[in-house]
Length: 449
Image 1 (tube, one colour):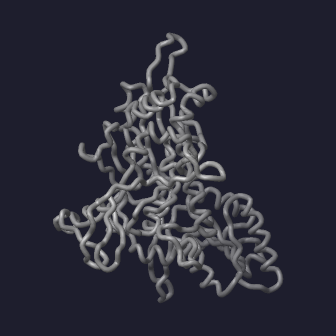
Image 2 (image 1 turned 180 degrees about the horizontal axis):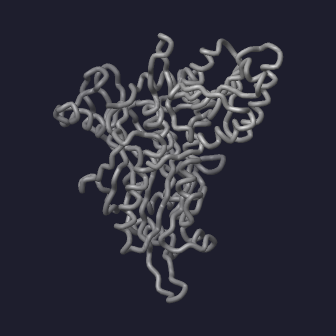
């Protein structure tokens, strides 16, 4: 079963300033969201963990940050201009809303209904004939619209990597197998069914293209399928709610010889977290054809070259965050009252430790500030002296803070503090002099997946 309902996660995210609708004072824009303070910290931690796994703990992948606006020919070569479309239908009844036909048909099949007889899910009205619309946002370069000035906001980060393949070969001193990784915004003008941040108009991708000798593509495809599944487990997601789903022949893109989705059991059902695709040599071959540049690797010893094949693990930051929130959301009973808690893994928790002075009498705030200042240079820490201690604990539990440090009477006497664990609720005395090191060990401890 899913770990939480979507309504519970959405309500907590808004209440605690993680994620909330964008432009809300003007009524909002469908499927756009802002990240508050704790959401920003959570997002940054997720991205940092991805960079750690992809670049900092390996020596065969380099980083890139390519431009959002690429030359228009990029999207001709990649096939996005001609084929990046969705089937759009409009309700002919009362509500006049628009929907993606394929989404309505998938939902009908899941309910055991005939997908050829779908109607408007809002008012039950008849639907129009489907028409194709391109998902890319178009804009213009320069102060006026004129022929030849049309450009597009990128719908994926991958193409920038392929455009910079030759440049990267020249400076990075790498040879296949090696990868190029980047994190960045992408934009798709999708008709979306809601579901919070699962599918949005602008989103961040964590994408890596791994260039391999053609005869090694199958081996590396298997490797990256398992490696990416394990990464989510290391972030604290239960393997019972993770799976690898291989695409059928009918689902495969024309250039792919194999694609698998890492799926998570969201409240909306099993859905894609990340795709891992064996893209062959399609992308480099296409860009070589359209640009006139040779995009291949040559052996400096023999002079022989080849166009590498590409294995692509492509993940969404928003979908990863949503999975982590759904997985971490929990309730229990404490002191006769229900407690809501986000059991986030310490590596991604927005705040690692909260410092809570028990009293405001002389000595307590000063020592608490001293402890806080000693911790904040080592990890994300928060000082909280507002309200009763129980209320402060609940506040920190709801944003996922794994540890809380309480300064009390005994602290003034012997320079020890109470260290509280969010999940076990155990409390132990720790000397202030040893606190930073102890928390450092706990926060950075990564158990094998």
